[in-house]
Length: 163
Image 1 (cartoon, rainbow, N blue to C red):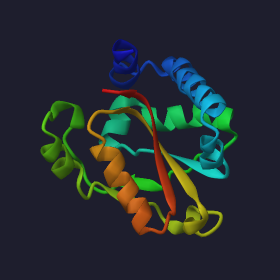
Image 2: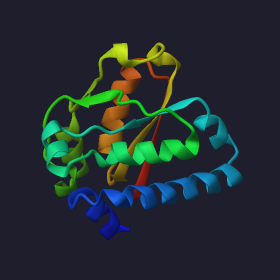
Image 3: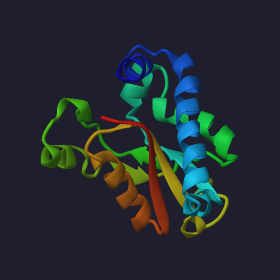
Image 4: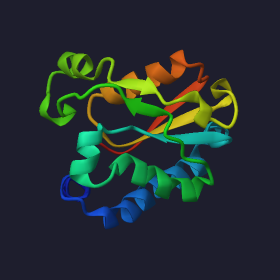
């Protein structure tokens, strides 16, 4: 799994989006069968990929979280919206082992995308943040904080792997 995500993310092997999304879907389907409350969490939700800086997106050729969200959306029949944008460049979280330093590194990194992109007021949305890997949870926490401040009632994280 580690090699697959690494190849997808750092070697721009875009074709891996489908098998990775299939793994996430298999997990979701298992949870739907064994944990009925998750059905309600997934109803009427929006998938929001964790954004990259423009520089990283250009270097990779794509935002891996966005590609995953678009694939996962097919299974959930949910829209994908880029609700967040990167506010500042940060060093790679993968290179920081200390949780406190990860939190400091990502602090203030996200901002809400222009509100005119939303089809209805944001406080009606349930948002599922999509990312490839979560190690400490600091990135998802910071992204969720920005969405909650904007009025989103429920924010969930969905990742391919916990690193």
